[in-house]
Amino acid sequence: MSHSPEQLPSDSNSYEYDVFISYSTQDQWVRRELLRRLEDAGLKCCIDYRDFRIGAPAISELKRAATTSRKTLMVLTPNYLKSKWTEFERYLLWTPDPLNKELRLIPLLKEPCELPPDIGYLTYLNFVDPDDPIFAWTQLLTALGKPPVTTPLQIHILPEKQVSEEAKEPTKVFISYSWDSEEHKNNVLAVANTLRKPWGIETDIDQYVRAKPPYTPRDGWDLWMEKRIEWADFVLIVCTETYRRRFRGDEESGQGRGATWEGTIIRQSLYNNLSRDTKFIPVVFSQQDVAHIPLILNSHDRYILDNEESLKTLVYRLRGKAIVAVPEVAPGDLPPPSKSVFWDTQKPSIEPPPVSLDLTQIETSGIAQTEAGEILEIDPSPILPKELRECHPAKLRFIKNIKDPNLMQWAYSLDRMERPESRAFELMWRATSHGVDLPKTGDLMILHQRAKVTHVVEFLDDQVRKTDSGFFRWVRAVWLAEQDWNQLPHQKDILGFSPNYADGNTHSFNSPNFSTFRKAWGSLEEFQKHIFKLLA
Image (cartoon, rainbow, N blue to C red):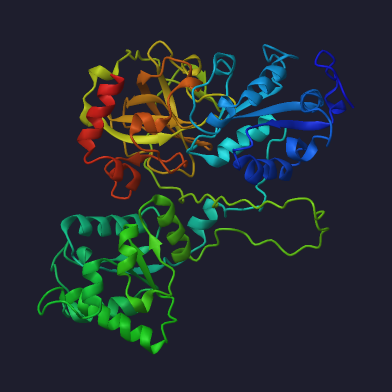
C-alpha cells in the first residue's frame, strides 16, 4: 500500500506499520536495543536496512515508510543532526503535517545535542541518561500506542503487607566489624538502626551494649561475641583493609582484639562447614573494599552498601523473602527464527515495608484535588509566597524524585497546585515509600523528574497526612523553573551528579549511603552554596 504525503490513511487500521524509525546508521543502539524492545512490545516497525525494498529508489522508499506508518520515531543524536541525508529525510517527514497536529512525529533525544528550531519547539522523549529508565520506556510505548501492561519477564514484587506481617519471629542479625574510624562506626550504626526500623530485623552490635549500663557484658566481651554469633541467624561481616588484617590475625599485638576474636570464631565455623555456611555474609561500604573481603569468604555473595537498592536486596535475603515470583513452566510456541527475542535487563524495584508513623491529621476546610484525582480538604489559612534567596542555604538537606500519574504531564506544575498564588501544594509519598517524616519545618528539598530539576520546596510544618494512597506534606515552592520544562538542562548540569534512584523516597544529602552525591561534592556546604548561586 502506498500513499502520497497528501493522501494519508484516514483510518489508523489501514497503516501497514505502527512506527517508522528515522535514525543515523552510526547509532548502533537503535538496532541493538530500540528495535527489539519496540517489536517485543507488539509494535510493527519499519526500518531501512530490513524493510526498504532492494533496488527501489531510497527517496521513494522513505516516502512509502513515512506514509504507511502510523507514527514516525525520530532518534535525535549528534550523528543524526549532522547527516545531510537525515536532514533531507527530516524535511520529507514534515511535509504531510508541518505543525505535527496529529502527533505522528515522535522525537526521542538519545544523546545531548543542540536541536534545530524545527524540532526544538516539539516536546521530546528524554533518553539521555534518564533517572528512571522504566518510566522513559513507558512514555515511549505509550506515545506509540502500546502502553506496557507488564514487564517482559512478568516480575512480581511481593505485597508490602506480606513482607511486614508474615514473619512472626524477627530475623536475628549480628554485625562484625572493626573500629576503623568514627565515620566507619557511625556507618555501621546507621545500618544496624535501619535494619531494626523500619525493616523489623533484630540486629545487635557492640555499640548497643556500650549505650546503657553496665556498658560492658557481664561475662566479658570474648564470651559475648561467641554467644552473639551463635544467637544470630546471620552475621554481617563489614570488610575493610583493617578488618581483613585482624580477621587473618595479622594485626599488631594488643590492637583490634574484638575483630580478631570474632574472626577466629567465624573462621572456625566456616572450617567446620567446609566454607559452605550461608550464615556469614560479607558486606562493604564501597567498591574499593571488595578487595579486602577475606579469601575464605570470596565464594559467598557480597553486598556493596553504597546505595539504598543494595541494602534493600540484602534485607530481602535476611528476611527470607522472594524478590520475584517464579512462574510455572508453561508450554508455548517458539518465536520464528528471524524474530529477535528480547529480555528485560532492569532489576526489579524493591520497596521498603511501610514505616509506622505517628501522624497528626491536618485540620482543614475547603476542597482541592490532587494530581492523582483524590479529593482532599485544605487548610484555609493564608500562605505567603517566598523566594529561594530568602532561605538559608544550610536548610537545603533533601532531594526527591517525583512523577505524575499521567505519564505525559509534569508533576506539580503551577497550574495544578492547590494554592498557585503562593505556590503551595501537598507533596505526595507512596504508601510504600519511606522518609516522609525526615524533613522538618523550614527544611528545603530539591524535586526532580524526567532527569530535570523543576522545584526547590520548603516544608511548611511537621504534619503528615495519611491516606490509602500514600502520605502528604504541605510544602511551598521557593524556586520553580520558569522556562519550558522540556527544555530545561539535564539534572546533572544543575546538581553536579545524576541520582541513580527513582523510588520516590526522601534522600538526605547527609546520608553516608548517598554515594553519587558524596563522590561529586567535597562537602554539603559546598553543594548548598552552588545551588543557591545557580538558582537564587
